[in-house]
Length: 156
View 1: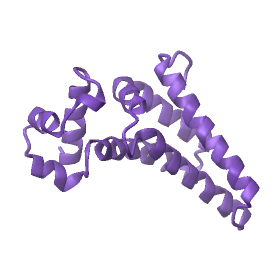
View 2: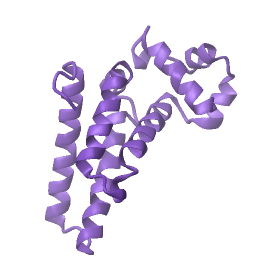
View 3: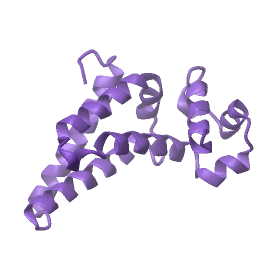
């Protein structure tokens, strides 16, 4: 298993016992049997590991969009995976540390939609459209977190 995935699995095991903000790098490395040096060779901090793991989900969810898959299909894949990893993402989205997952998700989806709009229109976003897109992305994240923290009752 790739070291990054090994560390992510260790973090997920730690999250079953403690909230994310209480988990130390030592907890993670002890759980998977690697050194702190190995951890820092791959990640800056605990939040960097969380964001990397989330990136993997987004890449897998959205990678086939140019091949007939729609944004809707990508979002369903994203939410299905988030739901499958409910414990991990509930803890990660609750965390307010620097470089937190909500901020990271905002940057990723804003960049994704900005690129898609500019690709379609062949123009940079106007200030008004940029504002509206940022508001949409913030609302999307808010609703994702609300959906997840309320038990993901509705289907992805």
